[in-house]
Length: 211
Image (cartoon, rainbow, N blue to C red; front, side):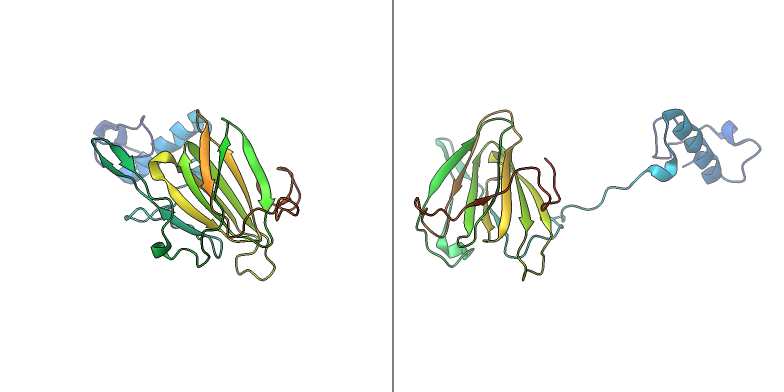
């Protein structure tokens, strides 16, 4: 733009006399100016990477989900007395299994629970309070998304129900400043004598993700 900004930096407010001689176009002068500024700041213009699209105009994520993982946001209903937020409703048809077991878990600030995988049960996590990062890894041999990682973040401002199929490793991290909590509604009751829960350390050779 004549006499304006090129859009790449804050230093290139260019006046017409900058172009006097040596440049055959305004675009060429601006490109040269940005090249000089880039050298001063320690980067080349070719190093810049444009942001990629992450959500649709309607607010839906564009990145693919692991096969069988389902997300549903459950916004609260508010009035002057407070709020009500649905946790689970069979009419949502998110999972065919009935409710058979429910528990709540908390994470202190900075703490991580995982990696965990189940062989028989699916998990249905409801993010209740705080800011939680939920990372998933598909290790199912027959899955069309085997090897995929999903890195998801939820908060009390976007309460979400997450279906995690059996065979998908998962870990939950509190990335907020206060204690966080979630509610799980697994498809099988907890078997105290023979838990359907298998663990890996956070740093391992199977899952290509590092906290």
